[in-house]
Each structure stands twice: as structure tokens, then as C-alpha cells.
Length: 230
Image (tube, rainbow, N blue to C red; front, side, top):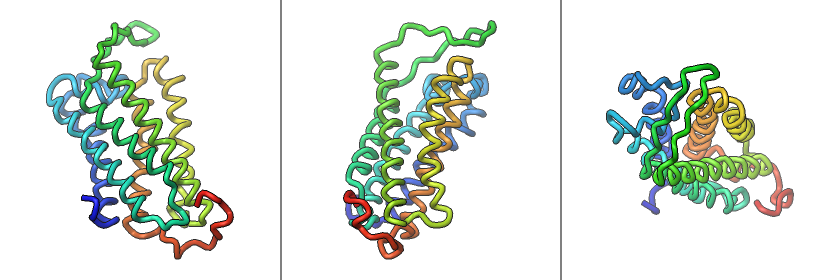
């Protein structure tokens, strides 16, 4: 696996991300229509019919993020490579893998206004799932931010790839909104999906750029001296 090309790694990253997106955003709307996506976390689909599909989606995305880290380690020139960002992507992949191993508890919704959740005592598995998810997604946001900054300073964000910098800012902002606004008002599912959408777009766009050699060092017009980390 380690000797595969950058393009292969990038395509695996895109495939894993798209598979997770299709499972959470489309497939389970048909498989478990009784779980309203406005209210329910995506991980709750692992409890119930075809829960194995949700676990498979976690594993595929974790594998995709690991492939993205490998693509970055091989596909970026030495001037633009950020070791820290790659480490964060590996941690993110590990967190997503573990989120698939440990299932989330099915939350109980209070239908009376306001539509808040009745929090049952969390199981040990739920605690591990939550911690793994938080660590994984936080690491992914940090890695995306670091990689975007390194590419910007090196002058390698051209055309559509300038969106990487914006998405790296929108993701943590959406996460804060998810935790502070959507969850308290009982719309955890909607908030989570909006937040994840920004993350998915960043991963797909970054992987596409790596596959197309868009971040190659010969596209840079900025000297290495502008940033000692590059």
C-alpha cells in the first residue's frame, strides 16, 4: 500500500468520503425513515436495521483519511509539506475508525416543546464513541487548517482550490454552531450534517488537487523563506 501512487491514494480518499456521505445523507433515509435526519446523529444509524452499513461507512472514511495523509506525504513538495498536518490526519483517521468500532446509544427525544433530548445514562461504548469522534473530527479540522495555510503561504491555492482556505474556516465555525445552537434546539442531526458537509468538501477538493498535481512545487511563485515551516 505504501508504494502506491499519489493519484491512487487521492482516489481512495475521495471514494471513502463519498461512500460515507451517501450512506449518511441518502441510504439511511430509505433504510431507517423513522429516524428523522433533522434530529438524529448519523452514528445512531448503527443501532437498528443494517447497522453494519453505518459501521462500514465509518471504516471506509477512516481508510480514506489515512489515504489522504499518505497522498499528502508523497504528493506535496518538500517546501509545502506540513508534518504536523499529516500527523493530525492520521489521528483523525484513527478516531473515525474507533467511532465505527464503538456504537452510539440511541437518544430519546422529548416531543414536548422545546424539543430537547432526554439524555439517558451513557454506556461505556457511547463514551468511547463520543470521545473517538470528537478527537477524530477535531484533528481533521486542525489538519485541514494547517494544510490550507501551508498551501496558501506557498502560493499553491489557485482557482477552485482557494475554496480550501474558506472551507477550513467554515468547518470549525459550523462545529461551534452545531454544539451551541443546533443541539440545544433539538436539531442535532441537521447541525451535524451541515458541519460534516464542509469537512467532506474540503477532503474531496484537497484529494482532487493532489490527484491532479495542482499543488506541485513548480506552481509556486513564493519563496520558501516566507514561512520557515515550508
